[in-house]
Image 1 (cartoon, rainbow, N blue to C red):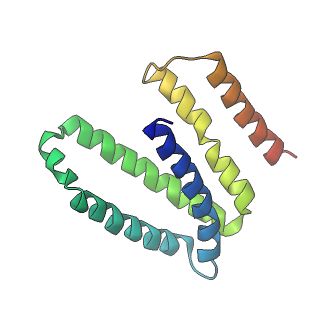
Image 2 (cartoon, rainbow, N blue to C red; image 1 turned 135 degrees about the horizontal axis):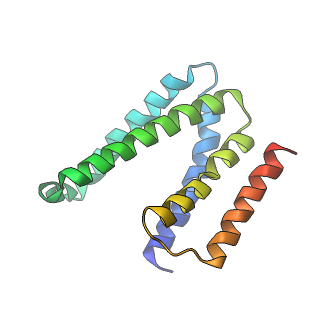
Length: 140
């Protein structure tokens, strides 16, 4: 198995665990406060990872374009998480997480249009099945 695939599978697993832990953690507190606690934890851990692995050396080669794109990605992540936590506070984890994971359809379209990634039959079928699953779940 290629390393990126192992990372993706680990990401999938931890994202699933995250949703259930978040739902429990939201009990009796505001969703924005819960997100702030989660985000602070992420900040501390990621800075620790960068420091421990001495990856901060790459800082000297970061361009303004990369900085802008990463800041924009951070803004999109913030909005995604704020709405995700608000939805988790009020909704069922199984529904909210499924709808959230359907973001892969948005990712696929943007990867075709903006990144020029190949549109294959396999990707279209997979994306279509994800979209169909979302429709079945939401409009049962």
